[in-house]
Amino acid sequence: MTGRIVVSRRIPEVGMSLLAAQPGVEVEVLEDAQDRGPARSRLLDAVATADVLLCLLTEAVDRELLSAGRRLRGVSQMAVGVDNVDMAAATELGIPVGHTPGVLTETTADLAWALLLATARRIPQAHRYQVEGRYRIWGPELFTGADVGSGGSGRRKVLGIVGFGRIGQAVARRSVGFDMEVLAHDPRNRDRVEAVLGVRWAPLDHLLSEADFVSLHTPLTPETHHLLGEEELRTMKSTAILVNTARGPVVDEAALVRALREGWIAGAGLDVYEDEPRMAPGLVDLPNVVLLPHVGSASIDTRDRMATMAAHNAVAFLQGERAPHTVDPGVYDTPAYRERTGG
Ligand code: GLV
Image 1 (cartoon, helix red, strand yellow):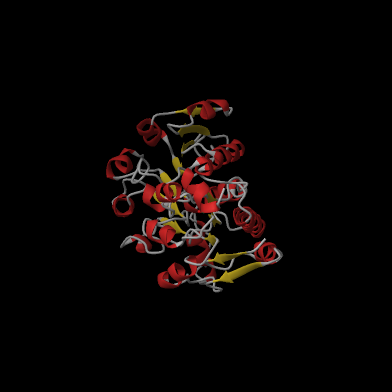
Image 2: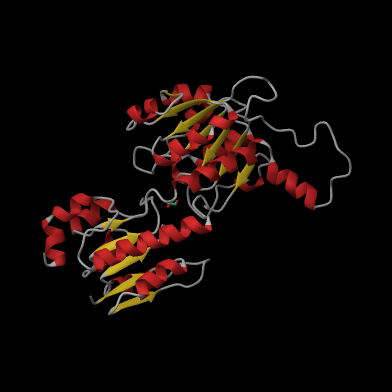
């Protein structure tokens, strides 16, 4: 096997070693640092002579880039979400796109819960207070927050899950220990919702008006862009907390800032932003937010598994084979793919 794999940004060593172990394969890493990506011009140049592009969600894999990859036999992305990839262009050009579903489900569900609890109980705010040496005496109202379980009020809290794919279901499973009532909304997965014990399907407006906690787990598509805008945020309870570990543009972030500032809702725990890594003006100054830098799947083991999966997808593409995890497997049956791979 010969060929050239361009890796836009260095992935964990286990994935790099897998690529390096392929005899006759040239691997070029465009950016080694963790805190920046390659210049667009460098990416465009490199992709022109690449057989496979292995990339991250930070790269815009648009029509221009895909078209520049005249030899490309596949794009392997180390992420499950591929909203940064122009999938219609990829399919039209006969370029299969690989991704990493399944392996990050539990880790991302853990983070959604960590954000939910941290926001409800104001953990980062209390931590800052403690490390700044401001704790002088125990106080009855010091950092009081919201119950997640039925502890304080005796009332079962309602968790609303929007998007009931793998991660949404994993979030639902974790609610059992908190004895919550769980509502889920997902137009594509109504049967799955009803198959999970104790979870009830609900229309979005009903879910939003009933939930004490709303956690988002939809992919970003034209249908889910700004799924939560001003109207939806105003539908939520003024005591509710919103958690977003899905994709930023699912929420109208400017409207969310107003919602948090004006008390339409009580708080938000966010791992993703509408125009990442930038945040909407005012978000960072709010006292009722917990903000993370898109670390949903960031456990050491999970990132290793994602890197392994992305490397396997890349090697399969190089060999002209179907990748183990292709976003749009229909591409393999297109004349454009056959022409590209000489099949
Ligand atoms: C992370 O956001 C991913 O899509 O894998």
